[in-house]
Amino acid sequence: MTQVPRSIDETETLLSEGGYVADRSLATVLFLALRMRRPLFLEGEAGVGKTEIAKVLADRLGRPLIRLQCYEGLDVSTALYEWNHAAQMIEIRLREASGDTARDAMRSDIFSERFLIRRPVLQALEGDPGRAPVLLIDELDRADEAFEAFLLEVLSDFQVTIPELGTIRATQIPIVIVTTNRTREIHDALKRRCLYHWLDYPDAARELEIVRRKVPTARADLSAELVAFVQRLRGEDLFKAPGVAETLDWATALTELDAVALDPELITDTLGVLLKYQDDIARIGQSEADEMLRAIRREHASA
Ligand SMILES: Nc1ncnc2c1ncn2[C@@H]1O[C@H](COP(=O)(O)OP(=O)(O)OP(=O)(O)O)[C@@H](O)[C@H]1O
Ligand SMILES: [Mg+2]
Image (cartoon, rainbow, N blue to C red):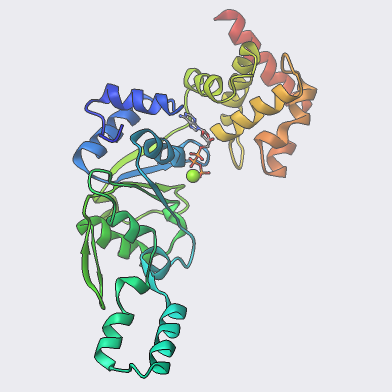
């Protein structure tokens, strides 16, 4: 498929075919972003499936995925374009050697598309007609504010100006997904260009479905128990609660260990798959794990 979905149901199906289990509100906002050709701004905790949406979307729509991973110090030359200085130098030397030094001609040749290195944002604007790429601007909160200002311009007009070449307009408005972990707030001006969605941890039923889809070898009863445990763990006072990625890792780890059910020792022995801070791991000792497990089984029995 290269056409965008025509309904919320179709959007849900598209994600599901890509192995992504979305709730209705996510399918709705994604559908609207695609129809209205607006960037989708996804905010949420780590490991809740923000990046994955862009990957699944590109895959299922048969579009190229262009990823811009943000970091502190990311600048326009890394995001947009850069001149290939080495190739330009060689061209100049070759021309000098052959006595061809007409300055104006040389200048316009040297600053032509042949020597332009296209970075992700430019690539996204120059996509094939009918196959607008998916541009993933990942973890925008890590970039600095100057970059945000640049992005604001791109997302407003979908065009960029390269002084030596002129203005390049998007042949097709790309499908833009912006993600942030909310380590800092992103400016309202940028958010206003986008449709916003807060991606929360899934509820138990949805998380169990994700495990079923992503770790098909995990036993059904074990999966239900481990999902219930992770859900309960998220309610504890932790520095960093486990995301869906960690649940999937845990399901894989426990399956590798041929576990048939959880027990306190197994939990504490494998806690490093779920929790990545020593203070958090220290909080969940065997007695806490035992208590949580009992509570889960009591709830299960009374359900
Ligand atoms: N709803 C979902 N359906 C299917 N898989 C999911 C879902 N949510 C998360 N996952 C899986 O969880 C893992 C982590 O997802 P992803 O990398 O997209 O998280 P993220 O929100 O981008 O995290 P981070 O903020 O750390 O980058 C992936 O392997 C993805 O397949
Ligand atoms: Mg991510």
